[in-house]
Amino acid sequence: MEIMFEKGIPGFEEYKSFNVSNIDGNEKLKMITSKENSNIGFVSISPFKVKKDYELDLNNEVINELKIEKPEDVLVLNLITLGKTLETSTVNLKAPIIINIKNNKGKQLILQDDKYNIKEPLIGSEDNVSNY
Image (cartoon, rainbow, N blue to C red; front, side):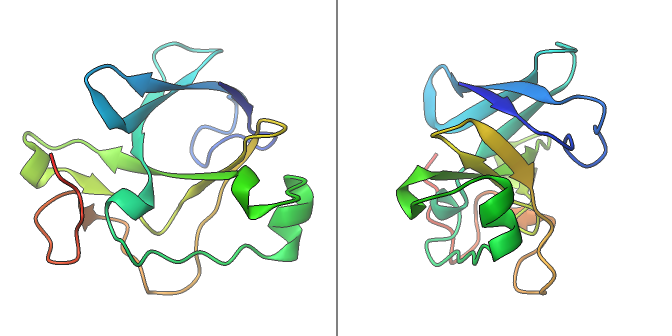
């Protein structure tokens, strides 16, 4: 699936067009790769696979910007920072990527509350529902 980030992803604003694809051998993980620079890519996961009680409230600005009509049209992914092992890998739950799967528009949000961490353990926490 090709996604257009009109403002890019924070830190990579010059890249607007990305492919989101499954990672062979692991249905939970997705690869987000720049179409403009194949050296730019991110491993991602649904936050609901990491924390079963993950909550996200999209404001009207985001809903309008991405032209979201129904909750079912939204795909939420969070970027993973790979460690030397899965146990040392983390996921950024504070900055989810929101994708409207109907029009392929995306945006990375930076949540303003302290409910979620930038470096949440990918596996091993008590609330974690990942099963690798």
